[in-house]
Figure 1 (cartoon, rainbow, N blue to C red):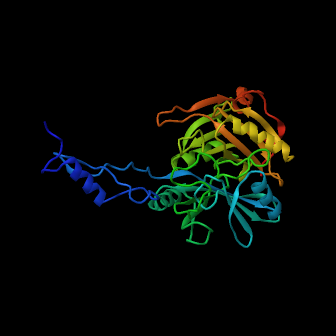
Figure 2 (figure 1 turned 90 degrees about the vertical axis):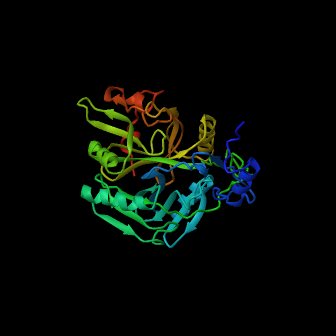
Length: 360
């Protein structure tokens, strides 16, 4: 009976060969070995590594302007449970407990509360050149940000979107030591970190929603130039887009655009793992006297469970969980304006005026 090995190799010899040339993921414990397969057709070869598609991976960080660094830092650490990963002359950089990148939120001192930029991480260094060329061909100027100019990250490109938002794309972001290990990690935050009713402790930043006067034009830019895919849309009676929800990370949305003033930030959202965490977050918010905007409730769009609330200076936050996984053949879901209440808040079936008007 054939063993499947050629040139006199045995299974033991194949294992010995594999041990001589390990090829493991970064952080794999020392001494770990890989089994390799020899075949008559191809001879000795390694099992292929899964490829990473080019382009944008996910949201990297959100940068906002604040008038009181101490107060907002105290809120994002003492209520949300984020960790300070760096400071410079005018900014504080924070990350969630399950994030390895340097930061997912930057608080920058300014005389007024506002929105600085949204940064998305790309898969490969070459993606920056490719996307810069596409953005230039679209007719938008692109600024190169040198390595080290932005704390915690390498070279990036920065530009203004058609709706007046500053957007940044970056590949290299400094890695930091998270609160859970890389070998046999616990599924929760580090032991000893307090939970409710004192901290919300989201594991990561999830998405943000911005406003634009021309939702269709903005959406076309994100689709055609940056490669986002629409998962859901809200149309008015004439078929014009009032809102679009778009993804790159195979989540319900990484970026959403709704009708409103150019350059506006409606909210940014933290991911929670399940509905119980959303319920606990409501307890934390009530315990700390945080102003709740809407929720706990559920969306029709994305099907996620949610609470909206405001940080001490009035920037809207969200905690979000659930939804669906949009596979590559996932069809775009459409909501019509006459069902806008159920689309946004499925249980209540209506929108409050503050949710529609207030933005940063």
